[in-house]
Length: 549
Image 1 (cartoon, rainbow, N blue to C red):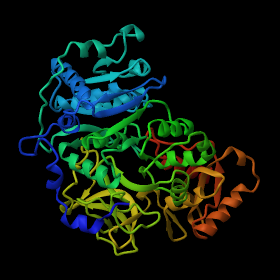
Image 2 (image 1 turned 120 degrees about the vertical axis):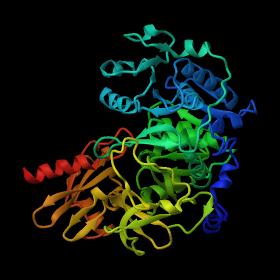
Image 3 (image 1 turned 180 degrees about the vertical axis):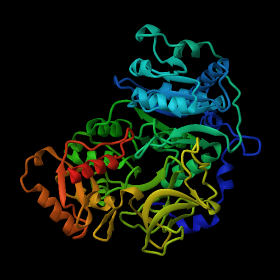
Image 4 (image 1 turned 90 degrees about the vertical axis):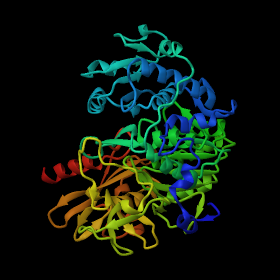
């Protein structure tokens, strides 16, 4: 943990402190490529990206080279009349070409739109149509999906030859880049102009549009510097895919904003691949979702095959981090992992900080990132007292780093007066920190109790048999609802006769007698969004159908 006290730092914080690090300013305009690339390109040896492709080939790209290639891509966009405010979509894996497209789009003053490579044609079509995207860049592996996309914009293929795919793309990446000069004057934007076009992960209903404005940069900088604790000498790896907010905000924009080297691993996630990447690239600062840490923990014996892992700090985001996993990271990887909280809409807003000193509280999302004031609200919109439960909200009037302007196409009104409502239910700890209990629509009302699924899932994960779990409410005539658990177990526990009873007793013992799962179903996998979040609404629907059958 850091040596600067959290409360002392927060009391003197101002956004101007961060803006002084930037080349542009809000009055004359900022260009995001200039801030995350050009500022660090004067040193020709300063590396912006280290990468390893799926075939094992590896390399690195300096900030100076990224600047040159971004200028070429921006020049191409300009030839197509694509510029300020236009959406440019990429359907690419974690490769250097992806980063060049991001930087070039931003250099041209256009808006970068990520597309996750696990998307099907329907999800792609929905996002392209909503954003009225002007161009989509993809590769031969992803190209077949576009055949079923209606209203397809112009296409660019990252391949040696158009013959690599069936059908004709409009442009070849390499050919068009070679036609452009290596210099392009960056287009500067005002603080409220968008530079990213995101979509929420869609745990419920259709994904909503989130246009991220230029004024988000100070918030990204703040999170990376003090919560993630990123230092210039770090080898930083964020495992999250840049097709989603945490990967795009904090595997690309955030680390490059601080002038640090980021790492791309194109290969799919496995314990072996992850341990080897940590060792090979001497990663000192790691960020990942809880699922990644849980799977590493489940494969701990493999660690002996990868000596030399030198993690200094680790961060987790996306879902609450189980204390059991925190203890394992400390023991097995010899570093502290801190739990962080945020959303696509807001970026990260609460954290247990690596670079600021504060009291530690188990199973807590930590303290507001300086520049935010977070509160919990009751059903009437009043801030709750310490120890009480409410919906987490951002006090916009006292949060100078807050940048969310509302959903792009007004799909929903998330504001109540001065507050932005997150939809997440928390306990106010009375010291500024909060502890997560679940989504508002995930809360289980059973026999007069309101039970948050996160705490039951966390308790189940402490059992040696459990790899993953999801907890929902199942309608019940007597109690209104009972707690039902869907559990993925380790292979060696398959077929254990009394395992369900063991898990029930474990939760009764470790958590409470009213919150234990009265039903346990063993499954091979849990339904998840493309970004890896558990889709509890599908399990709730399944449980409701069982109850009425």
